[in-house]
Each structure stands twice: as C-alpha cells, then as structure tokens.
Image 1 (cartoon, rainbow, N blue to C red):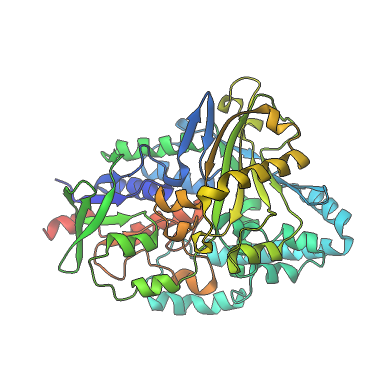
Image 2 (spheres, rainbow, N blue to C red):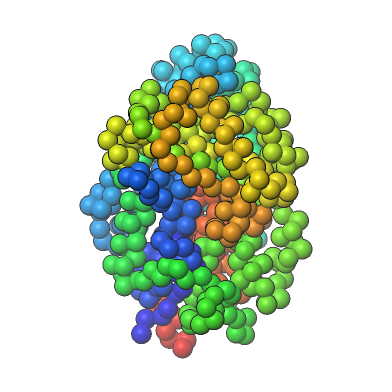
Length: 497
C-alpha cells in the first residue's frame, strides 16, 4: 500500500494539497464535513440560479495550471478560464465610476480626472508594487517559513520593502487624493486585512493583477473545484463528504490519523489540515499539550473581519452593472475602525457586488441575473446577534443597492439567501466567525503565522488561509505548493514503516 495522506477540508488549499501529494505517490483521502467539496468555494443552486458562495476572482491562473501540469494534463481541457477587462468597476459614494483596467492610458486619464498631480505617483506606485511582488510573492510565497533562519535571510529585503508600513501608508506616499488613496489601498479587504494595519507587502496585489490579469471560470468557481477534484481522483485519491473530523490522533509526538465525528478512526502517515489554523489547534488538537499555539496565544491573536453575504436572483437583467463592482460608502477609515477596532456593526457599509451573469448567462434562467453582494462586518467578538440583525441588515443593503446601481431591485427579486458570521463559525469552523483566519498584520505574517510544518507535531502540515503565505486564492494554492518542500517523499515514509 502507498503511504496514506489525510487532508482535512476540501477548500482550494486542501484540494491543491491533495493533487500534489497524489502526484508524488501518496494515497490521499480528503475529508469534508459539508455535503460537497469546495469549502468557502461551495456552490449554492436554486431555481435555475448558480451562486458561488465565496471566492469569485482568479488573479494567478498559472498557479492552478501547475496542478494540471504535475498531473500530466492541461487545465484548458477541463476548465475554461477567461480574462476580464476592466478588472472591476469602483463606484464612489458621490456616484463617480472608476474603471480599474489593464489599459494604462485609460488609468492615467481617469486618475488625471480626479487629481492630475497624482499621475506621476501612479507610475511610481506601479514600480513599487512590482518591486514588492518580486520578493514578497515571487520569491517567498511558495517557500516554507517554519525556520528562523528563513526569516533572518529574508529580513533585510522585507525591511527594505517597507513592511513596517501599512498598505494605506505606502499608498499615501504616491497619491495625494483621498479618493485615489482609497482606490489603491482597499485590496487587503479581499484577503481579510485592514488597509490601515495590513503590512505594505500586500501592495503587491496591484502588480499581480496587472501582470496576470483578473479572470473568471466559465460555469462559476464550482467548475474549477470540480476540475481539481478530477485531478485528485485521477491520482487515486478519494473525497469523502459529510465526514467531519473530531480530532487529530497523536502517538509519540507524531500525527498518526484522525478520529471522525462518528467515533471511527482513520490511520495516516501524514495529516494535512486545510481547516482554520486556530480551529486545527484549539479543537482538533485540544487533547494535545501545545508549546506555541496554546489557547491563550490564540485568544490574544487578531482575527480578520467577517462577512455578510447576500445571494439573490432577479427576474430581469441589469446589463449596465459590471461583473465585479465595488459600491463604496461615505466613510473609509471610520468604517474600517468600526469593523476592525471598535467591532461595531455600523449603519453604513461599502459593498462588493458580484454579477457573474454579466459574463456567463448560464448561471441564471434566461433573461434573469444572479448576484451576490458582500459587506465586510465585524467578526463575532462584536457580540452582534446575527439571528436578530441579519434580515434588517439585508434590507438596508437592498435599499443601498436600489439607490445606487440596482433600481427596482425589490420588485425583481426571485430567490434570496444570506450568509452571516455565524455561518463562518458553525458551517465553516472559523474561530470567531473570522472569514479569513488571522488578520494579515506584520507580526502575523510569514514566520509569525502558523507554520505550514506544524510546530506542535511531526507529520502534521497546514495549508489554507490561516498559514503562510495567507488568504486569497494565490495564497492558499501557494501554501499547498510548499508541501513539496516539507512533506517527506512517500518512499522515505514507506522505508521507515
């Protein structure tokens, strides 16, 4: 028998890990507590509508292409990924629309219309983003960071890149206009970070988008999930849904398998957790004494914000609404302070509106549209009772959309479903209902983040948003690539049996 690897969770990080381990010769079993694979990339289907539950933007398709390459196949044979341009549209609170595009001339013209003096700053910002990307992502994102020597070796470059500054502070060096500072600093919100506290390394996202583009998968992100599941199965791997894990089994300081929620046990030579990192240590290793990631340390950690997501269908099409759209509110820093610092559910909000039927009409019945709208909200440390607040909050979001980009929405609604911080806690097993695990601050990044190679047990490994390099599709898929460097070759495991 081949050495056995168990992967806990079937998010993109877990599925990518399963493909890579299978390609190397492991017999892989993926355990998923939901009724279908995908984790946060779950798919809801109702009345002819298809709703991606979580991620919607593919910014580094080559990372997915690599999964097909290690499997001896071509991604294009299974999944169609198409580029979007503009990447997204941003609607400021005063009604001005900014088209964030790959066309540099158009970008310069739009910036000049807001603040002519900031056009040279834009050019310098692109260069700074490129420089940060070359080190913080291209060199380090797929490299293990579990040894202090790695941190010390990278420290001079990381200091030179201004990691002690926040994204907003870095952006403010190049732009005078507050509108443009907002426009070029909001990206950390896409991976759970506060632009005013997230390390400036995340300014690399601008270069990542500009270099590799912003893409979508035909048929929705579920089509990409199904394609990767096919790769897992090609290597002989198994996906077991409706199979929750109760704890990781430990013998002599080594992970040796898992106990399922039904009480049964599965043995393994290697265990990979794609579960929330804090949940992995607090719950799945609750009976094991921990040296670093103790309950007390995890309680002191800073967690990302959560999300309120409303999925809805309409009986008409809104053809003037773009595929990806940011509908910004009247406040920026004050709203983020409410979300991240005061943990107060505010009356106003900034929204991300996703209309996939702008590019793929198959996701809704003919003549209809499928949407989801997302609002960053405080995690459950706010004490908000979402059982009471969910519907009033949804109604407020609906009013805002009707006033801005979706007139007549109430009369056109056909289906409706909500996801709140409670779902992130109970359905997705995220501590405090945090949507993106630990907040990506400087001292919760790289070596300071839970390591891909667990500090607590031999042969326990972590992938996904809560470990290095962090949240977002490029981050979680890169975390799986790191396993190639730190998980022993199966022949070595077999020889030690």
